[in-house]
Every structure is written in C-alpha cells, then in structure tokens.
Length: 302
Image (cartoon, rainbow, N blue to C red; front, side, top):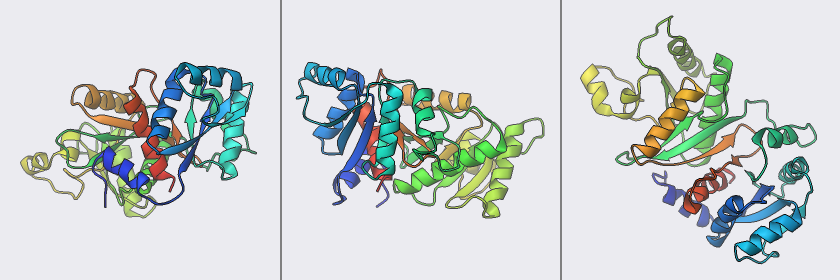
C-alpha cells in the first residue's frame, strides 16, 4: 500500500516483521537529541546505538529519567571520532542509518567522507523533505531546502535522483516529478527554466530513471489539477506531483517553511545521497516532530 500519511509510514515500519532498525546516533550529548531517541525507542521504532562521551551521555540520560545503561553506548571523546566510529558501524552492517547529535554538520560529514569509512556513493549529498499537506491526498517530497548551494545542472540532476531514490525506498514508487519555476515556458533569461527542460529531456532519454519528470512547472500546475484545466495544458504530472524540485536552496527553504507555518503541513527531512540516510532534527522541534525523520530513515533502510 502506498502511504499517504506519516502515521501509515510508521505503521509500515512497525508491522514489517523484519529486524528493528538500528540508528547510530553521533554525539547525543544534549537533551534535544536524546529526547528524540527516547521517543522513537519507546515506540519500538528503532534500536539506538550511541557514539560519544559516555559520561556526558549518561548524565543527560539521568536528567531525562532514563537509566544510563538503557542503550548501547560506544565511548568516543571527540565528535569527529564519534562520527567516524558511527560510519564504520554503518559500513559493517551494525547500523542501518545515522542521526546527528551535538556536533557541526560539516565536521560530521568530513569524518564520514573519509575513504576508509566509505559513506560516499559518488552522488552529491543533498536533503529531501517529505510533507503531509492538509487537503492534499498524497505525501509530497521537496528538495533541496538545506544542503545543496550548487545550482549547476549536474547538481540538480543528482539532487533529483537522490530524492527519487529516497521516495522509492519509502514506498512512493515511480514518483511524478515537477521541476519548479515561475513559468511553464523555457526562457533563456531564466536559467532555471532551461535546466528544468533539460532534466525533463534527460528523463525522456532514460538518463534519469525511476520517475516521470516534467519541467519547467509552476507550483499551481504541479499541485492543483484545476490550474491545468484553466490554462488548457496537459501532463501526467500536472496536479499530481509527488516530488517538487526547487530551483535553489533559498526557494526550497522558503517553500518548505511557508507550507509548514502557513498551510499547517507536517514535514520531515533527511540527508540523502550517501550509503544511508542521516537524520537531522531542529532544536526547536517537538519530540513528535523529531520522531518523523526517524520514521522516514527507518522506512528507507529496509
């Protein structure tokens, strides 16, 4: 069954019958990260494997009313050491996905990119969000609102492929992809429209697989069938988009936050393009909001 809500995704993970997904948590030395881990573990979603300073982690667990021995813990005195150890655990099959704790994202990625760790796959590392939008009958992906600054065609192709691969892994197979722009016509003075048309052509030449790409597409055409009817245009993607590929990080970030804060959308995102997903959570998010990215990563790791 194709999931249409985050809750259905969670139920698919819990009812899978397979082994519980192990999340390698890097430097969970703050209450923010540990609250998310505890919340997910309490719901039998994951088995946490913690990497970081043992004394600090046990101290934080105690403050949260948890036994210091509740989770497996590998001592690592430096954040980079914790990230490297977690990456090696992933490589060895001891974990299924990663979660970032109290360390800079750049430092974590640098440690994971070490050749011995083997986290890189040759693709760009990017970020994909999934949204449950009120009134929309399907889950919708959006990329890249957090990582990819590069706006080259090569980068956009990799970001799109990362997102398609991720959606397929969470059960949203053969997604319809809308490469967004302000207009539907190619305009040489608007480079994002040129790139969108080229991504569509790559899909038609089977250089981009596992999806159906349309572009350039305006947001209203991508999301609302009535917009296509009014404009008198047709495409299998119009009004049915499963994935929105934005022309820049700024536009993706603005759209994501507008949907969250003005439309009441529920969203969760993960870092993709590596050997396994990486969960990043906002410090301001509620425990439930921190739970959903782990649901996505757990579902994608089967």
